Amino acid sequence: ITGSGRGLGRSLALVFADNGYDIIINGRTKRDLEKLEGEILQHGVKCYVVQGDLRSDETIDKLYDAARESDIGVLINNAGVMSPVLPFHKVPNETLEEIFTTNLLVPVKLSKKIYPLFLEKGHGCIINLNSIVGLESRELKSVATSAKWGLRGFTASIRLEAEKNNVRVVGVYPTGIKTRPEYEFGMDPDEVSKKIYENYKN
Image (cartoon, rainbow, N blue to C red):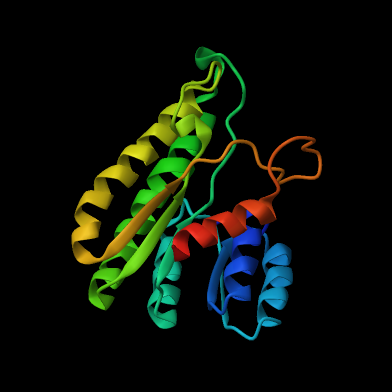
């Protein structure tokens, strides 16, 4: 589960651990990962920690190594960055690159790395956490929308070939989630995580 140090990724890690899954967690903040690791281990399952920035190929390679060691069955591409609410021409180039890299290129590259492991096993599942802006356009969110539409296209396209190999590919398109204390509105991340797990099992 990428981006699992906090927010929805953290909730997903605990829901899957509660249901007996060994978990690979990833994030950039050591303290968050150490705290989550302790909570996961209390469920009597294994926890593999891969600290690092997903924009680095080294981090993706480490996730692959952990995936092979743990005999991975589910990949959840959860990590993402928020887009500033700005007119398109005012979005800084470095912000544009960060959004496209983290929200689109990273899940594509990581899926490409992990997918062969599912082919070897003869089954598996890729869950791509998208957003409501991956389904509909929003004013002042052109950069986020284009990245998420790209992820939606990737999800739909890889599904066509993956299903022939008994590999499921799922896209999730939530509206706002209360992943930070300062967010006053949005869905509860624990409830969203439970729904995602229930969907996966069905």
